[in-house]
Length: 105
Image (cartoon, rainbow, N blue to C red; front, side, top):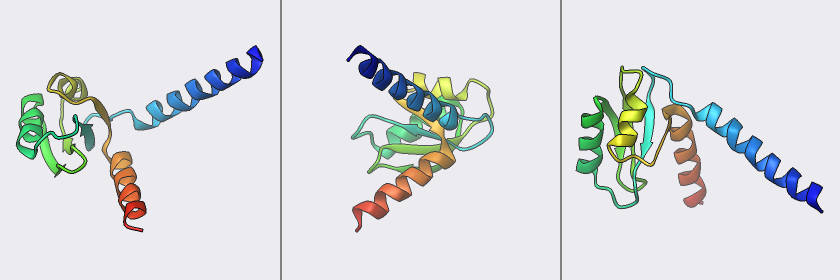
């Protein structure tokens, strides 16, 4: 029984690690910053500006800001400005489009 539990935990850890490697933000490329649910567009815009980025797209319904920043620590700056998850922008846009198409039937 322990082997099965270990296998499940190990598999989950490997899947999460693979996702984080694939979603790691690349400096100079679009980055998606996910904010707490209910964050308004002006609040997201302010957070992106504080982090030193330029807004490409804001989605208040999903509380996501797609932006680009030049600094190597831009992703860390977004975390300090209130984002709870920062990932590669192209991956996030694909996931959001897929979720919307599933929701619309």
